[in-house]
Length: 128
Image (cartoon, rainbow, N blue to C red; front, side, top):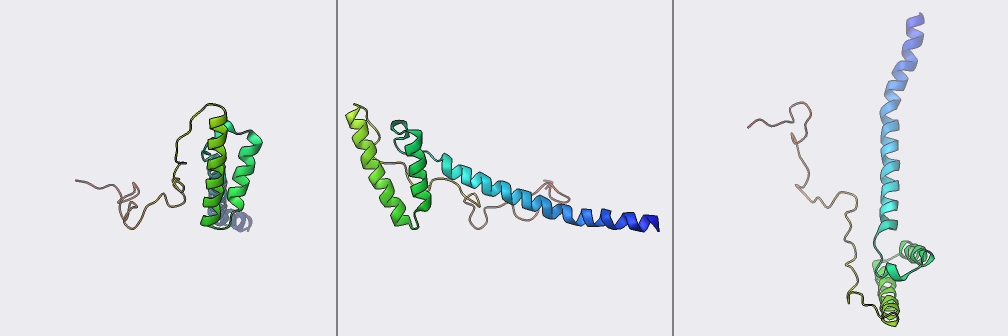
Protein backbone atom coordinates (compact mmCIF):
# COMPACT_ATOMS: atom_id res chain seq x y z
CA UNK A 1 0.00 0.00 0.00
CA UNK A 2 2.86 2.34 0.80
CA UNK A 3 4.31 1.87 -2.71
CA UNK A 4 1.05 2.93 -4.34
CA UNK A 5 0.85 6.12 -2.28
CA UNK A 6 4.38 7.07 -3.34
CA UNK A 7 3.82 6.17 -6.95
CA UNK A 8 1.01 8.65 -7.57
CA UNK A 9 3.03 11.83 -6.73
CA UNK A 10 5.99 10.56 -8.77
CA UNK A 11 3.80 9.88 -11.82
CA UNK A 12 2.04 13.25 -11.43
CA UNK A 13 5.37 15.06 -11.22
CA UNK A 14 6.66 13.21 -14.30
CA UNK A 15 3.57 14.24 -16.25
CA UNK A 16 3.74 17.87 -15.19
CA UNK A 17 7.48 18.35 -15.71
CA UNK A 18 7.34 18.68 -19.53
CA UNK A 19 4.60 21.33 -19.35
CA UNK A 20 6.73 23.34 -16.92
CA UNK A 21 9.67 23.14 -19.30
CA UNK A 22 7.52 24.31 -22.21
CA UNK A 23 6.21 27.22 -20.14
CA UNK A 24 9.74 28.23 -19.14
CA UNK A 25 10.87 28.05 -22.79
CA UNK A 26 7.92 30.21 -23.90
CA UNK A 27 8.68 32.80 -21.21
CA UNK A 28 12.36 32.87 -22.21
CA UNK A 29 11.46 33.28 -25.90
CA UNK A 30 9.09 36.16 -25.10
CA UNK A 31 11.75 37.82 -22.95
CA UNK A 32 14.36 37.39 -25.70
CA UNK A 33 12.03 38.91 -28.32
CA UNK A 34 11.27 41.90 -26.09
CA UNK A 35 14.96 42.38 -25.42
CA UNK A 36 15.73 42.11 -29.15
CA UNK A 37 13.19 44.81 -29.92
CA UNK A 38 14.77 47.13 -27.39
CA UNK A 39 18.31 46.33 -28.58
CA UNK A 40 17.76 47.12 -32.27
CA UNK A 41 20.13 49.82 -33.47
CA UNK A 42 18.59 53.26 -33.71
CA UNK A 43 19.64 55.56 -36.52
CA UNK A 44 21.79 58.31 -35.03
CA UNK A 45 21.71 56.79 -31.54
CA UNK A 46 25.17 58.20 -30.85
CA UNK A 47 23.56 61.66 -31.01
CA UNK A 48 20.76 60.78 -28.58
CA UNK A 49 20.51 60.62 -24.82
CA UNK A 50 19.49 57.39 -23.12
CA UNK A 51 16.10 58.96 -22.36
CA UNK A 52 15.59 59.87 -26.04
CA UNK A 53 16.42 56.32 -27.10
CA UNK A 54 13.90 54.92 -24.61
CA UNK A 55 11.23 57.36 -25.81
CA UNK A 56 11.90 56.49 -29.46
CA UNK A 57 11.60 52.76 -28.76
CA UNK A 58 8.40 53.33 -26.81
CA UNK A 59 6.92 55.28 -29.74
CA UNK A 60 7.90 52.53 -32.17
CA UNK A 61 6.41 49.80 -29.98
CA UNK A 62 3.21 51.81 -29.52
CA UNK A 63 2.77 52.42 -33.26
CA UNK A 64 -0.14 50.38 -34.55
CA UNK A 65 0.66 50.20 -38.27
CA UNK A 66 3.70 49.84 -40.49
CA UNK A 67 2.90 53.24 -42.00
CA UNK A 68 2.90 54.85 -38.56
CA UNK A 69 6.29 53.29 -37.77
CA UNK A 70 7.65 54.45 -41.13
CA UNK A 71 6.51 58.03 -40.38
CA UNK A 72 8.21 57.92 -36.96
CA UNK A 73 11.41 56.66 -38.63
CA UNK A 74 11.26 59.41 -41.26
CA UNK A 75 10.81 62.19 -38.70
CA UNK A 76 13.56 60.70 -36.54
CA UNK A 77 15.89 60.44 -39.54
CA UNK A 78 15.38 64.13 -40.37
CA UNK A 79 16.01 65.15 -36.74
CA UNK A 80 19.22 63.11 -36.54
CA UNK A 81 20.45 64.57 -39.85
CA UNK A 82 19.91 68.09 -38.43
CA UNK A 83 21.76 67.21 -35.20
CA UNK A 84 24.66 65.68 -37.08
CA UNK A 85 24.95 68.71 -39.34
CA UNK A 86 24.89 71.09 -36.34
CA UNK A 87 27.78 69.12 -34.77
CA UNK A 88 29.75 68.91 -38.01
CA UNK A 89 29.20 65.16 -38.29
CA UNK A 90 27.83 63.06 -41.10
CA UNK A 91 25.42 60.18 -40.91
CA UNK A 92 24.48 57.85 -43.76
CA UNK A 93 21.88 59.41 -46.05
CA UNK A 94 19.52 56.47 -45.68
CA UNK A 95 18.35 55.08 -42.38
CA UNK A 96 18.95 51.38 -41.85
CA UNK A 97 16.45 49.12 -43.60
CA UNK A 98 13.51 48.27 -41.38
CA UNK A 99 12.56 44.72 -40.57
CA UNK A 100 16.07 43.35 -40.94
CA UNK A 101 15.93 41.30 -37.75
CA UNK A 102 15.17 37.63 -37.76
CA UNK A 103 12.05 37.18 -35.71
CA UNK A 104 10.22 34.01 -34.80
CA UNK A 105 10.80 31.26 -37.32
CA UNK A 106 14.25 32.49 -38.29
CA UNK A 107 12.98 33.35 -41.80
CA UNK A 108 12.68 29.70 -42.77
CA UNK A 109 10.10 29.38 -45.47
CA UNK A 110 8.75 26.11 -46.76
CA UNK A 111 11.49 23.50 -46.83
CA UNK A 112 13.83 25.61 -44.70
CA UNK A 113 13.84 23.37 -41.63
CA UNK A 114 15.69 20.15 -40.98
CA UNK A 115 12.74 17.97 -41.96
CA UNK A 116 12.27 14.30 -41.18
CA UNK A 117 15.44 12.51 -40.17
CA UNK A 118 17.50 15.71 -40.02
CA UNK A 119 18.04 15.63 -36.28
CA UNK A 120 20.47 13.57 -34.29
CA UNK A 121 17.87 11.46 -32.47
CA UNK A 122 17.20 7.80 -33.09
CA UNK A 123 17.37 7.21 -36.82
CA UNK A 124 18.21 10.88 -37.43
CA UNK A 125 21.84 10.51 -38.28
CA UNK A 126 22.14 9.72 -41.97
CA UNK A 127 24.68 7.20 -43.14
CA UNK A 128 26.21 7.80 -46.53
